[in-house]
Every structure is written in structure tokens, then in C-alpha cells.
Length: 272
Image (spheres, rainbow, N blue to C red):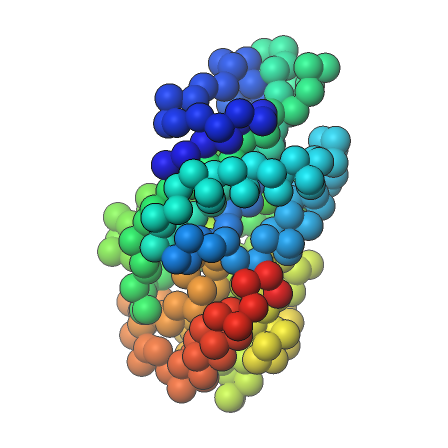
């Protein structure tokens, strides 16, 4: 693991202030970028989304050139990563112990971490909590992740690797760190961004490279899906073999096609 903090390359002993607003209130945004064979994937799209999230949260727009410098520094310093994540965290910086922001400037942190490759298939559970599609932070990738932590623990207690949320009107939304796709009558469908789902980078690439439609899906229709898969930065395309107690064949035919196309196209272009 290597860490780049506010312009300095450090090891895992790097520290931020205990008064950092990202720590005390979750006032920050982040991005996770896949590293494969030492090379980061889709950097441009992730940085564009980081800027959108920061501005949407009311933070100053981050300096993209500075972020690119940090990315290059940690990748060069940690070249042996076969498969891993690169995490960019951008917070409100040192602030009062309240909801008010300070004036000291933002904290910028970039870190690498090697991880295990995910399984090609997995199980998911629906959770008793909902996403608020009208929230001030809906669609923003913020560091306010406590509800995701709680929901993911709920899923793992039930033998699953991901938790799936509905929104306040009962439509399918997203996972704690993933977007969801379903196949109905041979048609590939994913929830709309208006459902409260994050505009995932992998989600967008699947829609561009394979096709599919964005449509509101009542949560209960999840059990009628012929196939289900999740997308995320480190999952890529992951087939789902069980939803709650409902079993599916995974990966299904369309899921396998999507995974193949995604694998081939992403190998051809590291920065689509």
C-alpha cells in the first residue's frame, strides 16, 4: 500500500487531522479505480464523477491535474499490484466540530491496495432500509457510508456478498457498492438514475458496449428476473445465483455475453 496525501508520497503511517470534516461528519467524496497488472482503468470517467460529486456536495471542485499527479505517484510507487483498488478521497478538510465547514482547504488522499479478485457469481439479499432518491446526496459518491456498512453487514450475516436497496417508492435502486441489472423476457434492464442509484462507471460502459434500457423496476419484480448481475469497479460483471432465498442459474446467457464483451473492450482501452 502506498499513500499520497496533499502532495506527499507516504506509507501506511500517513495521518489526517482528527478535525478533518471527512472524519467527523462524512463531509467528503471518493472514487475507487480498478488496478489490473499495475494499470488503472477508466481514470478519466472516475475523475469526472469525483468532480461532479464534490460540486454536488458543495465542496470546491478538486484540481484534476493534482489528482492525476497523485494517481501517477502511487501507481509508480506500488507497481506490483496484479489486481487492486486505487482510492481517491477528497474531504472538506480541517473544520469545526460541527456541521460548519472550515477555511483551511480540502484534504486530498490517494491510496492503493491489492485485493483478491471477486468470484464470477455471488448471492444478494434485499434489505429492510431504503435509498432516499430525493436526498441532498442522492447520486453522489460521498464518504457518508454508514448505511452501506450496516446493510453490507446485514447481507454477510445471511451468506450474501451484497445488499440491495429499494427506494422510497418501492422501486429497485442499487447495492451498497454496485449497480444492478436484470433480464426480463430477454431484455436487459437497469434502474434509472432518478431511482437514486449512483451513475456507476461500469454501469455506463455496459450500456454503451452491450446495450440495455434504464427503467423503473418494482422491487418485487426482482424475483421474476431470468438473470441478474451486478456491476462495479472491482466486480466488473458478476452473475447472481441467489436473491434472498430465490435461486437463479448464474451466469446466465446474457450475463456471460456482457462479461465477455466488457472483458474484451476494457482490455483494448484502459481509459474509455
